Structures are given as structure tokens and as C-alpha cells.
Length: 366
Image (cartoon, rainbow, N blue to C red; front, side):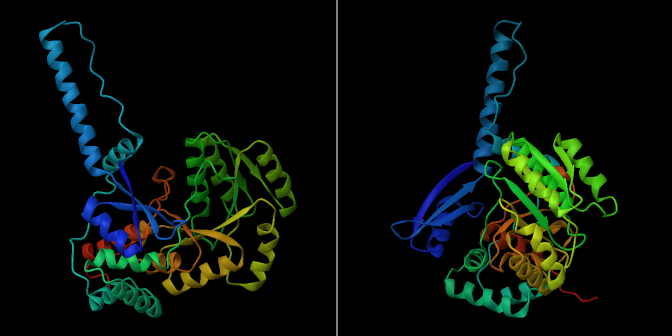
């Protein structure tokens, strides 16, 4: 993976510099304000380096095979040199068939066309017009970059880093996929060498305990059932002493309901606990926005959007990502191996435009 840092006065200039130097396939992975002013943007490019690494490995293989043919006949089998983790991961994604969809062809910015695309994704009217206006004001001639610049103004991002995770409480509506998210976070932590404790706080849910326990066994993680809120402080304390990641899966509820949210506050207010909201991409976009607002009021510091692979329209994803609560991750698979994905403004812009270009009739009401 080729990484490069750009310094610019604005996101508009940074996006233009990234595109000019690294091409349309580059992805912005982080951005932050510099102390002296301006913007520091870090961009990544997978494909060229992957191709170079594979070509180098192939040349090495061929060279060593030729040496074996003309020299010592007892030459041991040639083993390809280890590739960087990012290259191996990219190869695995290709084997799985992920990331194989073509990106949308470059197109000139057109506000009316962008509004049409956002409406087909069922983006709430006010949000669609605000994004289209910001994209137009960016002055960028490319549709993808203009949309990315507009999203950058509204889309905070804060992915989980395994080395920094301590105790995470997942909350959200019924069927949002909290148990699967708990397992995915646990898998990331275990791959980083962290000890993990999965906690089932939904002791009465049908099959909830058994499912989470199964996840824990597969991940070689500890498993605890917390039948009451009073049991959690001790569990959290034990996890802190062991420097383990504690992930709490709670019962689903409508976070917009004041009474339910008040009852949940007893859990969310525990010391050392971070609340992360889980919202499905398949819900109505306006309800997704309301849910994220309620999650913010309940103390959620990040939000995870699940089931993006199941959503025919991505208005809920866009609405959830632009409500002021940092977007941690999205999921495109119910399987733990599917992992957690991180979206940047540029990758979300590409996702929105690509989904539209691959399914131009998504706006049909039939």
C-alpha cells in the first residue's frame, strides 16, 4: 500500500492534489487540522503497489526456477516472499469476490444529477439539498470529488483501534445486528493480540445468550452473562485489571422512546464505558437520522451502520453518517469473517455513485 501525506489549505485543494498525484483510485484514510493552520490529509493507494509486489514475487520465482534448472537439481521448492499485510488482505478480498465492482466512470459535476441520485437513495429532502449545495460550492468539476468534499463537512469518522479499545457497550434497535458487531469487534481485537470478554446483557432475549457464547468460543474469548446492571461494574473492573477488551451486547430497544432511554442511562453512565450505537442500513433514512440523534442523547460516542450489503438504497447510511456522531464502521456481511469496514468521505461518495450507476432504476416505486 502506497501512503502519502498532503498539506493543503482546504479539503478542496487536498482532494485535487490527491487526484492529480495518485489518481482516481486513491482513498483518503485520515485528515486533521495542522497546528500551524491548513489541513493534513493522508491518502492510500493499494493497486499499483500490489501489482508491483506480485510482479516482483513472480520475477523472483522465475529467476530462482531458472537457477534450479541450470544448476543444482536439488534446489528446494521456491516460496514466494511474504507480501505486506495490506497486499495479502487485498488479495484475500479479491479471492472472496469483494471489491470487484467497477467504480463509477468519472463524470462532470451536475447539481441536478446529484440531487436525482440522492433522491433515488431516499436521502431526506433537506439533507439532500444541503449536500448538493455544499458540493456545488466546492467548485470541484468532478462529481465524486465534489460529493466527497461536501460529505467531509458533515461526516465525522472515528474507527475503533484494537490497541485503544477498553470497554464498549453496544445499543440500538431490535434486529440491528449488535451481536454480530460485538463478534466483529472482538475478532479485530483478538487478531491484534488483545484478550476479550464478551458480555451478554440481554439474558432474556431468545437465543441471544447462546449466539454470543458461540461467537466467544470461536474467537477464544471469555464469555459472561450479566443478568442485571449491578453485575456490570465488577465485570468492567476485572476487564480493566486484565487489560482486556470488554464488549457488552445489550437488548434492543427504541432509543427514541424517552422511558426506555432513561432506563438505559443506568448502563451508559458506568465509568470507563464507551457507548456505541448500532443502526441498520435497511431502515428508513429519516428514522435512521432520528435514531442516531437519540443515540447521541443516550451517550453514544460513535455509530456503526450494519447490513449495507442488504440495502438497495443508501439514504439511511448517509443520514446516519451525517448526524454529528462519528461513524466508526459499516458492515457488509452478517458473517464475522466479513469484518468491519471504515468509510471516508471519498469512499462513501464512491459508494453512493457506484450503487446508483450499477442500479440506475433504484428509484422505482414499483
